[in-house]
Figure 1 (cartoon, rainbow, N blue to C red):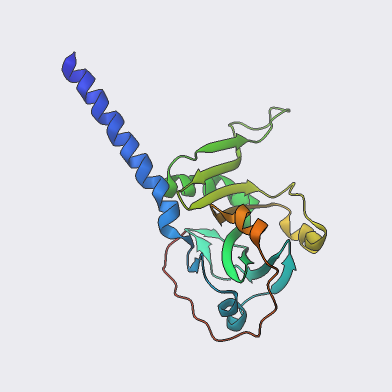
Figure 2: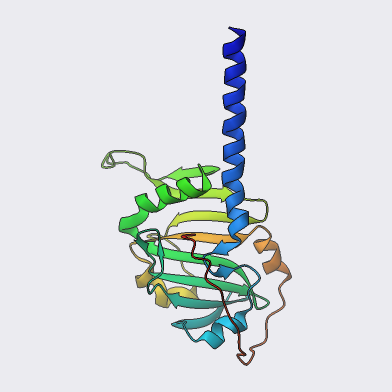
Length: 205
């Protein structure tokens, strides 16, 4: 009986250790693929690989087409990069709604079970299983959110992207102090693009 109790304690400790290791992965990545927090806006403008560039809510936003970008086998539709004071502080990775279930599974494999989950309403009983609408992973310095964009409320400046957001889901990476940075932000001045480089890490996330 005592040996069984000790075994249970060991298994519980191992489980806790594994979960802690998974949660730190959000911090270790420090962004998505080769888009890293702290990157300067200039390097992305000078690369000229973006399809749109606008200013909203005290942030510069650079929209980059998905191209050959993917999360495992899941194609990326586009990536929105949010810059506060010209430094990358938030990353939104948008994929097709048809890949939503597989995307959540992929995140769980890499980051472990989410800290918080919100499920879609199933008033008509049409969903065979619970389907995640939002998932949250919290690292020490970086937060990761999975969100369903189908009913996303857009600001006036974002109205032109309303149709693009239909039937989409996203992964949102952001710095833990992102909201505080927004409060303190000084409106950035437009700058002339200069040379900048970016290195691809080859990671799915």
